[in-house]
Length: 560
Image 1 (cartoon, rainbow, N blue to C red):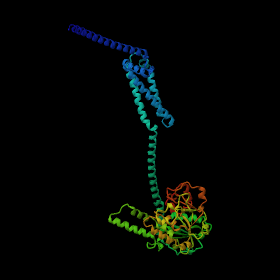
Image 2 (cartoon, helix red, strand yellow):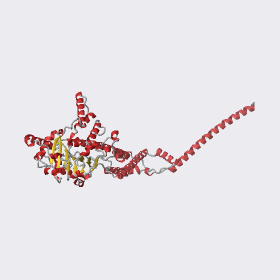
Image 3 (cartoon, helix red, strand yellow):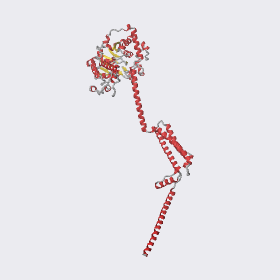
């Protein structure tokens, strides 16, 4: 038992001592390790510490760089971090401003003011860091930074940054290609819209000017009628001359209500004719202008012994709605229009528009399709529009062999222009099955007609059939040329282009050599030579045939 007790005491004392020694050894070991770690860290930091000058610092790499940044963040002046941010912001905007300036030079646009501003801004940014006050107090000092100086620098930099951003926003449109392209497209579209509207307005105004009666022309007609009323005994009708039906003479058909225009056509033919006494003019006008037309040619007889017959449209009794489809269409549309007006249902629809088209369509234009019935004893006749001027003797036209064809005319097509497809509706099978869309069109205004061949081919009946089929305007829209192309299809002989030059009423680019070489010049288009809108370069070709010695021409101030 005693042994056991001693052994137990000895064992307890030894366990306590061993535990204490073990604890002390552990604490010494930990302290030693911390000390060694601190010494190692301090050694590395002090061994690698860089110069304190801010803008000459060199960045480290790897772990050393990280330790360096950590040390600077913990030990440096906090104002230096703020200075670094300001410095970087200034440098970034210098680079951006220089880029804009370089691009401005490359574009070579009218942006010299912006270019100068960009260059000045870049220079101003660079000059800030070069100021002695900032250089000595902020960039080249190892002491703590002066906060007041730093604030002043920051304010200057922010002011220039604000100005730079405003200028770049203002100038962005000039340097953003996509934005410029889109803006250009928008501008082109807007200009196209304006151009389209201007063309429509111009065409409408020109149409009104062309269809209106000038004050001088109205004055002339009134003076002539007044003369007829004042001296009725001087203007009694005579019996028709035998020359009016003599097939051996040269006969002309002129259908118009314009007195001065008809007189110019007749005078120009006679003045250039080698044998004027062999020329006979058949003038047809409407009832309103019949008296004025007769008085003119009675007061101013045609020179050289030429003969002039003046008639009214109403003198041809066959011209009635029972025989003439166009008159029938006009009367039908007029009844429908007045019925709608009476019922209060009149609208601006297609029906009313068609009526107005027919109402304004002069039947004088459609008389050309009835020449054989109007002049049954004649074999050939030359049709002339009232807006032409004759410059040479035309008797050679009667000598041309038409080879059995009805119509001798000058063709107007060139390339794809003035083909049948431009005048007729080839989506309609009646047109598509009968005509070639590429067939060349020809011009009205100067046409030599073989009336015997016309009667043989029954051209008037063919014209009637086409007019009856076009009641709803589905074959062609309006005018006399489309039905003429159809009626005389394969019955037209092409004449040399020098016989008839067109375009003096709309084309300012016709060669004067071509005009001077032409037998007939035609003022087709809206710019008629008796209007104020006539083209000056062509007007004198017409005015030289105006009878300025006629007292009423002077009184009415034609200004020719």
